Image (cartoon, rainbow, N blue to C red; front, side, top):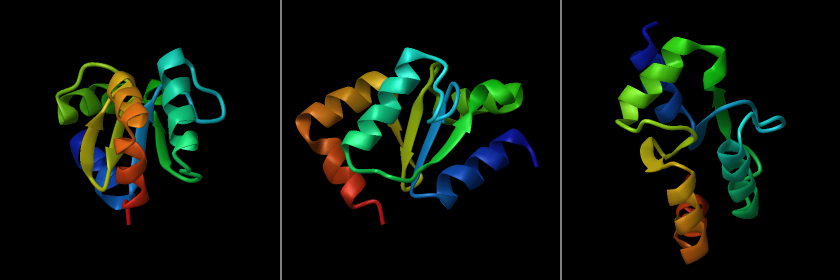
Length: 104
């Protein structure tokens, strides 16, 4: 399966997807760690995560798929939400909690 097809299947096959550096248990950058913490603070106990450091094709493919140059990248219900800064802003305004509560 090509990277774009795999990414599409991942983001449409799970309610919450986080493309990140590392894993939720061991983030490999501060932005990814912050994104995981924000999801936890929003009450998200389970989400699908992809370690972009494991696969260069997925790493570049995710950038192309979202037209977003950095990680982490959050998807909710197949829609690209944004990176760490956008997640932080949406969390602080309450918008992200509302979005994630309605994820299913």
